[in-house]
Amino acid sequence: EILAEILKGRHINKYRKKQIIYSEGNRPSRLYYIISGKVKLVKTNDDAKELVVGLYKEGDFIGHVPLLENSVYRDSAEALEDAELALIPREEFDELMKKDISLISLFTKILAKDVAEYQEHLISIAYNSLRKKVAQALVALNRTYKKPNEEYFIDMSRESLASIAGTATESLIRTLTDFKNEKLIEVKEAKIKILNEEKLDKLLN
Image (tube, rainbow, N blue to C red; front, side, top):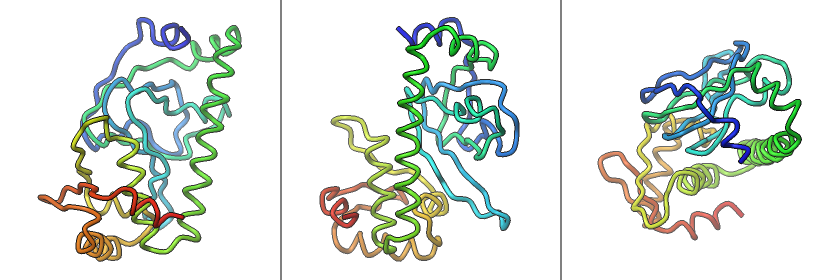
């Protein structure tokens, strides 16, 4: 019911793969809801090096944090594949938040989930071994985007995958080769299929 109220009659924008949805440093004017497709959130340092800080899919909101904080975007959003997003103007979102306490509860839960996942990601980058970082990135992608009973291949450039794992591209490629030799993954035309998620998952613990 909450979603129906938010999304009723909204304009829907279409984005191509790799198209920027919003940019770090800009002030938000709307809330985004992913109707279809996949989106990544990216932070860029002073050396123009990218770090993926969030993976989102159909049914997720993005761009809500700066709206709630009344601040600028702290990251950029980019379509990982062709995507459709519903747009909720900032003024209407603010009005809905004022009059609907259930909406406040919804976004409190969303924020709590975002914070927990972000902290886990930072801890992984800071303390995990290279093998654990790469395994975590693969498992995260698989769990976020694989649908039930689907043969899912991770279709992503090695540079993008390295930015999710928080490592250098060359190190990622060497680790993927090790995982392939260990029969943990299959590589087919640069796409990656996880063969043994359970064993990969144990590398995280």
